[in-house]
Image 1 (tube, rainbow, N blue to C red):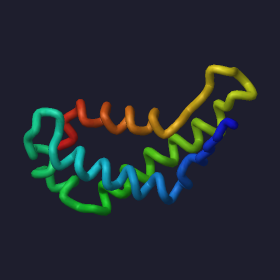
Image 2: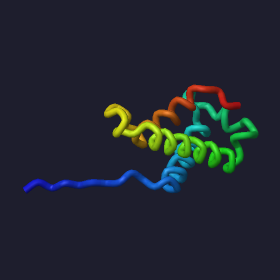
Image 3: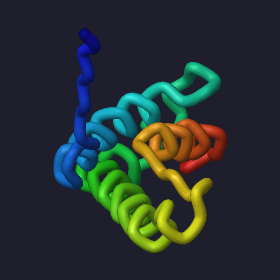
Length: 95
């Protein structure tokens, strides 16, 4: 007997909540381990972090809808790609 488990990807509002928390931690402690980005007045506001998370998730959803596997088999977007985007945002000085 084989057990199969299948989980759906999180809904859009769940992704926004997940990545807003992830972004706030990433902005608080950037790649260098300093709090330089958090000192910038723009990123002290939770609304700004939430807005960035919402925008990132919306772009992800649009890309997933536009580039699907029915067109090309290698077009497969998953939340892992969204996590990579967040890690890449940490490479830049957002202040």
